[in-house]
Length: 188
Image (cartoon, rainbow, N blue to C red; front, side, top):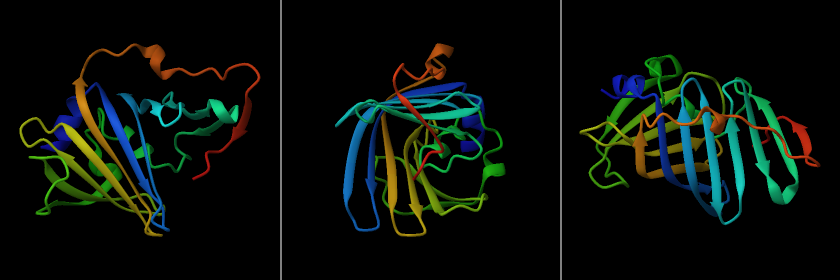
C-alpha cells in the first residue's frame, strides 16, 4: 500500500499550492515548486505571491524570505513546521514509525478520484491530525492536510508530479546570501 510506495520513492517533485487558514479563519494561498529526496531532503520554491525558499539539507532546515533579508535556521529534528511531514513521505518504509491510527476515510476527496487516508503523528506536538489523498492506482501523493490543536490548518495540493527523476543533490544545499541576517529557530 501507501507505505511500500513511499519506501520505493527516491525523489518526488511537483507543483504545489499551499493553503493556510489560521485560528481566526484568515486564509492565505501560495504557490510554487516542491522537490523531495531521501533522507529528509526538501526544497520548496515559493513563487506567488512572493518569493520564498524552504530548504532541508537532511540535517538543517532553512527558511529564507528575500524581502525580509533574513534566514531562519533550525535542526530538522527540532523544527516544528507544517512542511516537515512532507519529508517523511519519501523513501520512508517506516511511515508507521512517525504516524499511527491509519484510517481510510469515506469523505469525498478534494482531488478527484483520490483515496483519503487519515493518520496521527506519534510525536507530541500541536499537530492533531494529518490527512493525505493518494491516487488509488499509483499511490501518488496528491494532497496533504494538517490540523492543529488551535483549529488552524494548512494543506498542500500537488500537480505535475514526477517520481525518481534523479534530482540534482545541489537542490538540497543552501548557503545564506551575503548581507542576510541569520536567526536561530524557525517560528511557527
